[in-house]
Amino acid sequence: MNLYFIILFFILLSVVSIFVYNEFKDRKILKTVTNLNRGTKSERKMVLKILKSGIKSTAIFHDLYLNNGNGKYSQIDLVVATKVGIVVFEVKEYSGWIFGTENQINWTQILAYGKREYKFYNPILQNKKHVEDLKKFYHFDNIPVFSMIVFFGNCEFKNLIDLPSRTILTKSNKVIIRFNEILENNQPVKYENKWEIVSLLKQAVKNGENSIILEKHIENIQNLKTRNRFY
Image (cartoon, rainbow, N blue to C red; front, side, top):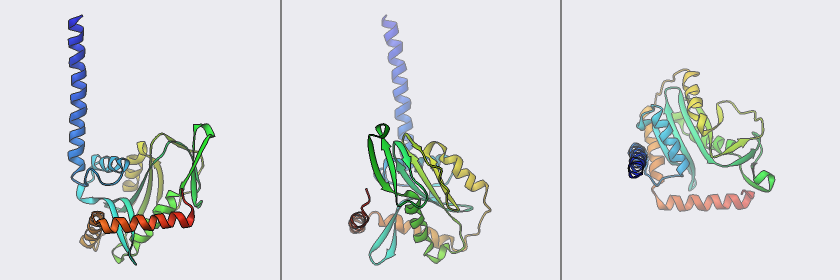
């Protein structure tokens, strides 16, 4: 019996050691792109997925605050610069059934087999605005920009949605497949202002470290929710 417990102990120790090692390795990789307290846990998982798919850390920009003028900023979860253009990510985490169409202002989350219902702003429209804000800068004039909305969590889409051009809606377990489809099915583009684009995106990431910008952005979001009754 003692031998049994000794074997079991070493098995458990091995499992824990592997888990701790993988966590340490992931944290080390993640820190090549972002701080461990930036954004949401799902956003950081998305950054790791992109890194492990082979994209260089210098092409990944997490938790950006893009200056739109008039003291307002667009918060973008994740931007990846690729050989075929810019991919803008909106990352969500929901469980349950998800109902929504392309142009509905609010989508609906259904939990407990219909007993609980919650509204949230249409992520397609949300990320469309992020893409539009990015395109206001002349550096992006001739560069394709793709919108990718990614859902983490145990959720199920219950509507058939007609997606706009260059827009992808996917769950997290298939996101790298869909991301690679973008790379494989589009022609490479020439970045005439590559370093200006990198500089702009780096500055947008740095803006997220400014407490004044963060406070102002939160205030603008709260005003928007009040005005439009978002949930």
